[in-house]
Amino acid sequence: MNVKIVCIGKIKDKYITEGIFEFSKRMQVFANLEIIELKEYTKENSVELSIKKESEEILKYLSKFNSYEILLDLNGKEFDSRSMSNYIENLKNNGISNISFIIGGSDGVNEELKKRVNLKLKFSNFTFPHQLMRLILMEQIYRWFAISNNIKYHK
Image (cartoon, rainbow, N blue to C red):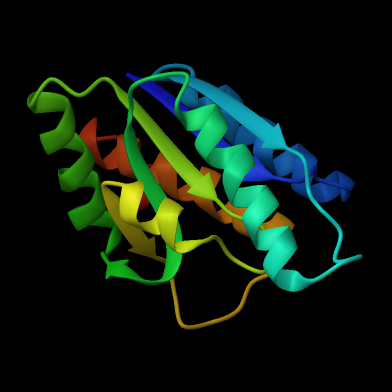
């Protein structure tokens, strides 16, 4: 399986980078993992313009390949870890070998992107720092694959 994490901006904190690196190493036994960091636009003009530009960057990148697209969204569907593991396993069993997880900018994404994706996924009602969310997603992806492969990590 091929997993892409398409996100806005770069990680600045060393501890987050180290955590992402650790889960990237662990993921190698389950899937090919690629993290795509797209340009973050500042709010020099307006929040709406930042959302528009960042969403366009994401859409442009996604148009380059065919994948099952999962957007992290506050209004998305909630799963527990086992259910999400089963969801991904079902995708795999149905011949889907490319999954893209999308983390938009800190102000969100536009409606065009929300309508395009296959699944909107909600992690929590809590607010997380944007960079930390990438680490949380990495840990969960590893957990979902560990569950599917009966690895004891998830307990």
